[in-house]
Length: 515
Image (tube, rainbow, N blue to C red; front, side):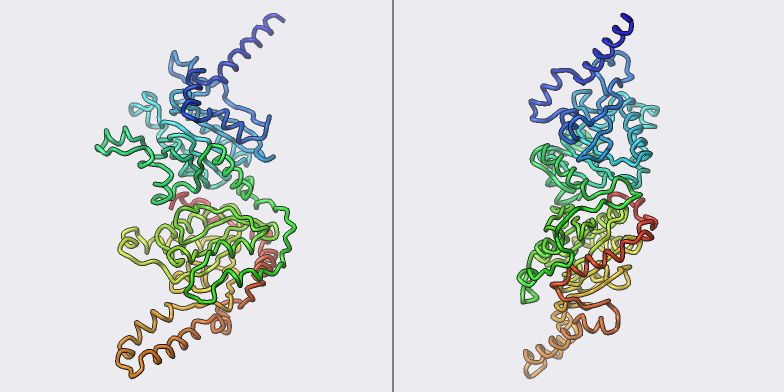
């Protein structure tokens, strides 16, 4: 009995030591930086008392480092988040600065395999310095550590969500850009390597925020989807996003309870949409009156602002909405908007979330800068994503839908299950103003009364652009009353969300997580 008690006491002592990670001084240093420890972050994410840690007694396999490396820089386990089971991993900055050693990497691989096998979502709370030296040195060191295979083969089998909560390089960055949703704490850096390595490599001197701060990612890369001013805010964003996701790719997201009448008329749209078709407005306001209880969760809200991508619910069903934003670049998509649309379509298709498209665009933005950013390629990749998406797709032309952008917003021929328009819609190869200028410019310059002739031509071309011509030839399915848009969408989903569609092959699940 005494032997058993001694063994039990030894176990308790080891676990108490393990809870301190790199030790009290390292924990104090983390707090002095204004940051939480890995376990404190996990406690904020998970429901109280539900986290079951796996690998607590792991240590570095470097001789002599055992007692100062519990967890080997990574805390992993299973817990519940708003009542739903999930895998959680968190980089432990108190152990070798959260760098990745042999045990750390083996542990990460194991927890990923556990998640996929059991259909459990993965949450990553990351901060760390990349591959540990000297563990990764030499041909034998780097051979099996560079890019963890689980990140390359996960293929959206389970939802993956990452919060970058401290400076992150190497592995934490690979995990983030391979995730479905990423939020980053303001004031932190996410990059391949840190500023010091950058300066040594090529002499560039940048601050961490200039290199990989939230503004850099929102303005240029699109590698994060949201940011927060506090760790609490970032963790709450993970939870909010998760509420729109299924447990795994083999099921649809759960229905959300609502008392919002699915057949409710949305008369408010008449006060939002301007009378003049050249006036801007906020498409988000139209979305809010259409969806259940006016609640949305916008995806990449600070990147590619000419296009809105947002999650919402209609009659309890989770939907993904792709909408032009007229108050940004007149709703004309550029390279960033194309990238954003493609990533969102892939995401929704992978998790059985139907897509709704709301058009109001004068066409694509054209410029030298757009061409340098491979605009034609980005347009076609967006088209390819649409063609391969197997989830239900419903398309509504609110106002303008001009040129090739009509197709990219899931116009006819792009796989839309239903394509309808408001009576305010204008569908054409180009807008009447531009078309008249290009085709009749010389004739108008010689006309006796060019202003009057121009007005006649504009009226003719405007009539040709009306939705009724397309509806008469069954090129669109209907012209609907704007106030009945919510009713139309809710009814359509009832008929489209069939068991057969749910079992459709997810062709976009293996597409890259960054386009």
